[in-house]
Amino acid sequence: MRSLLRTLEHATLRDIALVCLADALVGASFGAISVSGGLPLWVPVAMSVLVFAGGSQFAAVGVVLSGGGALAAVATGLVLNARLLPFGFTVADVLDGPWWRRLLGAQLITDETAAFALQQNDGRRRRAAFWLCGVALFAVWNVSVLLGAAAGGLIGDTDVLGLDAAFPAVLLALVLPALADRRTRVAALVGAVVAVAATPYVPAGLPVLLALVGLLFAGRPRPEEVPHRDGELVTGGVLKEEAR
Amino acid sequence: MMPLYAVLLLAGGTYAFRLAGPLLGHRLALSERVRHLLAVAAAVLLVALVATGALTQGHDFAGWARPAGVLVAGVLALRRAPFPVVVVAGAATTAVLRLCGVG
Image (cartoon, rainbow over all chains, first blue to last red; front, side, top):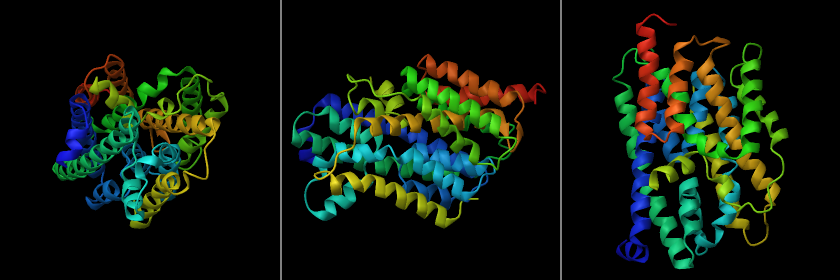
């Protein structure tokens, strides 16, 4: 641990700490919203340890709380997490080594850890940034979700407190940075219109998946685009703002 | 409800996405086009969740209080307000509107 800390620059350590702090707030809101919405405490807690991907956890719980089926929730979460696939390829060199290190390290691949690893230019630092950020985030995320879930159980009538607005508000704050790209914005708008228009007519959970027709407007990647920049959304985007 | 099998399915699938790179990274590369589509797909789903979550409840309109709160949160987020401020202001707006009798 000491040597990990010494490998990294002060600015990187500070940024990792800020990201952990911001994620703690997101985690606590996830726990609180899930439990106050009516889910048993083990659901947000187990999801946070086993899934460990904030955006998809919010998405899956959102589908379920709006009356959707469990499978629609799983499908939504999985489409959202498909972006971890390219991240895995990008940080593959960081996880080189014994098989157990790859298996453990894979679970720590998130928007944040991939972004921090990619910032570093030499192999030793990439590795240090990835593992330090990954282990710290895993600990902070799970503790804050547990605390939030425990607090969520104490809240009485959630509608009086406006907590039903908190869930879309959190997601909006997380996704905004990704919408700076015009084609992403168009695709997302088309998708949102389709989803809202379909809501009265199709089973809950399905409208969000129907939004994927918006991908027809995604266009092609610009040649000058740096590969990983495009993927820095969900928590990565908003956290970068705060880290600055 | 979110049964245990659903949590495990989501966890297993997510882990598979994560593990593919570290296991196959030397033998396989993803095209730029696929990376782009995956990133846009994530944004599309999140925005659709925001829209349906803000505007609808079950199969019906959610009433004005909730989308108004989400709108306030969105404006604050655009102005780079800190995350807790964004969320609390959104919820508070909805709560106050309901207190005033807006549905």
